[in-house]
Amino acid sequence: MPRGADTAIPWFEIARTIVENDPITMRAEPILQAICDEYKVSAWLGKARGLQVTYLVVCNSTDPLSYKVSVGGTTRSLYATSSGKALLASLPLQERKAAVAQLTLTPFTPATITSKTRLLKDLEEGEARGWFLNREESVEDALAISARFVWSGSTYTITVAGSLKRVERQLNDIVNTIMLATATLKSQANP
Image (tube, rainbow, N blue to C red; front, top):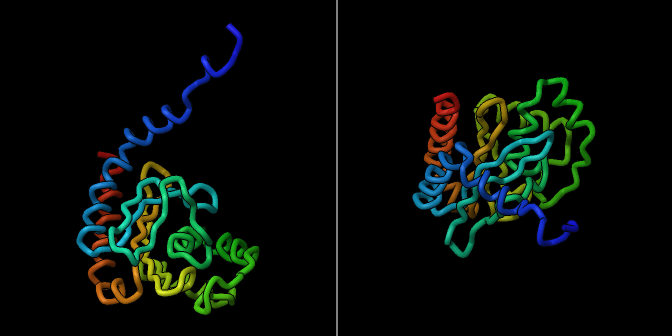
């Protein structure tokens, strides 16, 4: 039989089956949904590959003023998003400096960091805290927080985002919840 549509491999179905049975996504989804429900924010899990974060699990807020991303989407920017900063800061210091040196820091908003020196300082501060902040740097009136963890040798980020006022009002609680979520998922890496 000649090769054609009738013999095509259903790649989409295969990919969906893998994602639906991936232990990290199965474990992360209820955690992210609980964060989304409790704080009325969007929450997602991203996986790093090279210098890009791809979203694997997304729980978008039902609030009309919410920050939304889609499964399969990628981080908008390494320097103006909290997940991008978490990824950059995961690099050894010399690699981090080299990666930042290659970036063109084009502003998305008036709050976007456009100084490489300031960005390196922001990455250092985030690394010291254990979480990374994007306060209106990529989208006005939005605040996002990310923390990272390693699962089976891969780097992942959990990001929570929402309206500036809503997230700022709950910042400490959200940060504590994200840190607990990353610790929980990291501890399950080798059950």
